Length: 247
Image (tube, rainbow, N blue to C red; front, side, top):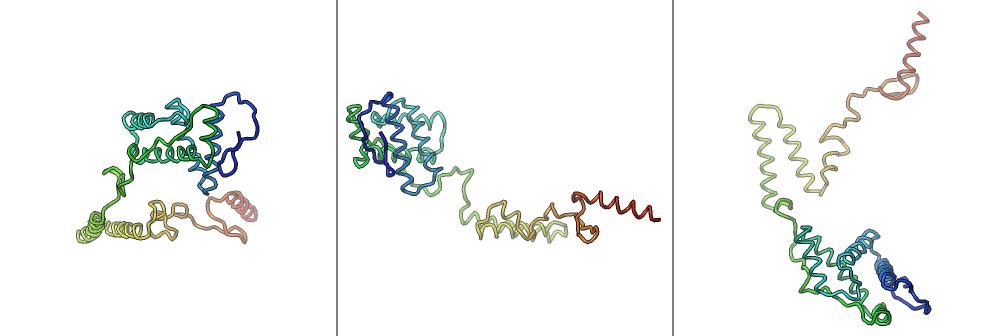
């Protein structure tokens, strides 16, 4: 039974199906994919949500028109207690499964009528506010991995500045790298630069460029070459042999 580009199912004949349940589930997933493509979602997002639905199907060993809230609670209880999934992961799984149930149970897409005709029942929403996680915190990371607060960030910058003054007052080397580091910290925070981008600036003021260090240009004939470039040793040896024969 095909689906259109918007995810709606339509009947095109009375040909009997060999594996009715499996083919109906696959048609549901195809229709849901089309519906998400109409919403202009990214392909990776769509495929990731479909994999979550397939994982829930494997865990419950039941088809969408027989799902119950108890099955959903057992699935996420297993993820939390056995697999130790993070809270954000659980919420992402629940969001994907809730969207799928909303799609197959919506009367505009026709899957309720198809399932009633084929199996005598219809899919329903099994994910509600009382059995799913709510997004109530701005930052769900653990204390070991989280962003600095404004006060902690100010203390960090003050400590970096104090290290520059401390090293400079001790009459020892190292104040310039310390000053470079504190400037890099502030620039990276101000412009939101990633660590790799901040440490590999294009003008090379923070760190030397190893590819250019210690390379001195050579001139062979009228063309400038660099030491280590392919072909330099051969041309230099030929010129040296020619000079030695002339002598």
